[in-house]
Image 1 (spheres, rainbow, N blue to C red):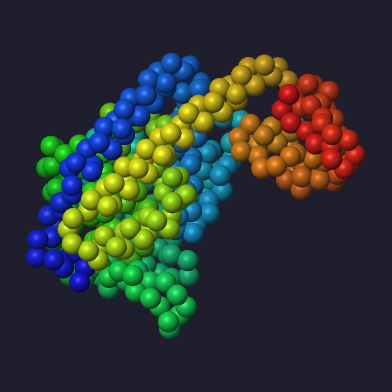
Image 2 (cartoon, rainbow, N blue to C red; image 1 turned 120 degrees about the vertical axis):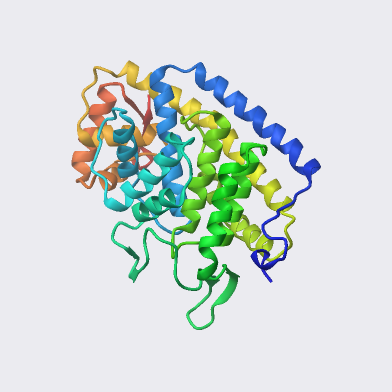
Amino acid sequence: MYIHQLKNWPNFTWDSDDVSSLLGAVRHQQGKILGQMQALGFGQLEENMLVALTMDALKTSEIEGEFLHPDQVRSSIARRLGIEIAGAIKAERDVEGVVEMLLDATQNYNKLLTEERLFDWHAALFPTGRSGMHKIITGAWRDGTMQVTSGAMGKEIIHFEAPNAEKLPTEMKLFLDWVQDENKLDKVLKAALAHLWFVTIHPFDDGNGRIARAITDMFLAQADESPQRFYSMSAQIQIERNTYYSLLESTQKGDLDCTEWMVWFLNCLLRSMKQTDETIAKSRTRTKFWEVNKTTVFNARQQKIVQLLLDDFFGNLNVSKYAKISKISTDTALRDLQDLVKKEVLEQLGLGRSTHYKIK
């Protein structure tokens, strides 16, 4: 029996002693982040927000096994928020849909969550009306059974079965009425509970996880009382993906005491918030770099490589890596790198085959 089949559904309970101390820690970290952001310049503020939103869009899709183009996501978000960035590119429709949903959830965080708004999000996620090779119902509740399974075809393991389709109008009205009317519960706890509740109903043919995380982001923006996002819950969920799915399954097969889920959610949120310190440090490095090099002339390949080095470049940069990333010959790569060394943008380290380059 699943929790949505229990007599008292959806009267969730949790141990307030276990939850309240963690909630206090989250609120403390939240205040620290907002204080740090107020001390940044406008450019750094925009950059940090762009990083957090880009990570959110990328990782909420990656959790579901879908990998979006990072530059397309960044460009789409920047364009919609009016942020000027170098090397902006056109985004595909699937990227635009995820970004559209995410920004509506966070930038319009006080807007009423309605059935129509959820339908709009769902339609944005699936602009072709298909999920992979399968045609799905978009912008409406599903009309069939919904099981979460794993394993090879014919040997599937059923992890969870959602409420029957005929119950969805009633279930979603109950959920949306609670979203609108519940004003006493702390918004962070409301985010945790709404996430669990929505994925338990699983009202769409596909995209339920991404929409649940968008709802979470909406309530976290309400908790921050700001549309500006500086941490990514989805990025942390992706890191803890196995635990995330395991806890959802065990909670949906248990009783209506969701203490374990609430405790994990708050700890996961804390860990996502603590990544912000590293993000701020990287942002300051980037800002300082571009201030120093504001008159330096880069070609498109050099600009892309420099941006990668300022973000999260894995390992050492050498001629062969530069050539592979830029899709050019090693001779052209070497000329580009030597030009950057001459301009004192990069410094050359090592000799022979161990020669590599880093930001000066």
